[in-house]
Length: 68
Image (cartoon, rainbow, N blue to C red; front, side):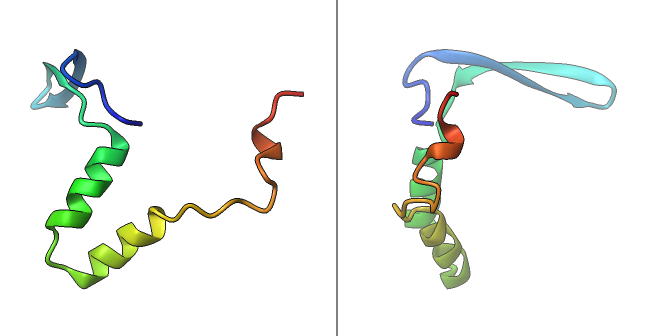
């Protein structure tokens, strides 16, 4: 969620029938959302990102994620 720091991780993609391999640090989901929130000029995008950044608790209080 927070990224890999300076550690490079492997990823890749297919284009034109060839696989392209990349080795680079992973930014992380949370830093990506924060960066996009801070740099966008769109009020709509900022509101959508703000909705995903709330710290509300689910009605199940985590019970669905618990091991049984």
